[in-house]
Length: 427
Image (tube, rainbow, N blue to C red):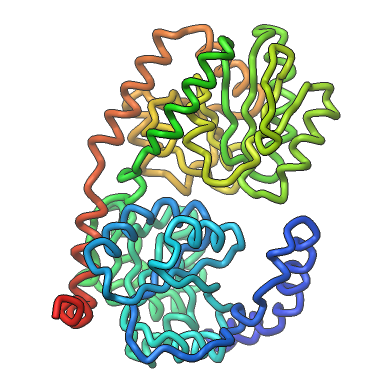
């Protein structure tokens, strides 16, 4: 099955690069560094063994930042490579970690591409975030005697069912992992049912609860909001298809709360411009944050089009809708809004944060709506009920506080698998 998978991946490669070129219309970074995606890096290979952390894009990277900071702070002499697959993830790695870690793209999952990556960087340990299971990556790592850990691992019932369709290939992949550090017992049990040896499972919680709130950005936002003296709601990390829905219901909400301001933050930078265009097409007065606008009483939409400022945008809001949940892609990071102390509202698609959503809903800190129409109604009700907002905000912070600690537990696991590197660093 792995050979068939490899053949299909190879046949799809022209379409994959065509898609990169197409996305490059709005973000030229998609047309750069294609050699890295094939395992060719254009500089001398590394003799010194390293640890590689792989985070697909911005969301996974931000969730892993407490772990990365802890590892780099404790073991500054160990070479670290952080890989992503998206340009936005790449830019965030370089901004947040600078020269403390090297960044490259993880190559496509073809055996010779992965082999080129491993020969280039000579890793002793590869740490995969969440559910990054790639047959050739795991197979070639096994050949190179590079141990692989899957940390902050989650496996929704839907993904579990999908992996059951390729049970033989899934079993082989899971048996090539040195350890799975799962977010919950339910996640761990699903991995075991698919073929992970039970002795290779640990349950250490979710790294995303260990979020570090950027207090300086939060303070700046609250000063800004105090000058507006108007209600604000945020639609954060919206995915393709959600912007139009959000803007349409916002226009309807203005009939009930005329001075209401929407902060709209699309998940991907290439949609910043189209979000503003959609707002203007609906007759909404819209400005972009990157233009350093003056938000006046007439402004109805602020498009958050700067990277790394999500805590600032959340700090402007009274109620948070977290995107990716009105379309079937799984919601984005609900923990981030909860940690700041906002009432959280989402759509029904929650599989990316199933455990966190269950905890927040049980505590009364989060509401789930069926569609955009109900979203508008619920947000209006919350904006008109400050006592309920305050209660939900307090419960949201309490849930986050009760679930911290995964970073320390996961760090201990990683250190066990790169012991000779840590000893060498101490020497």
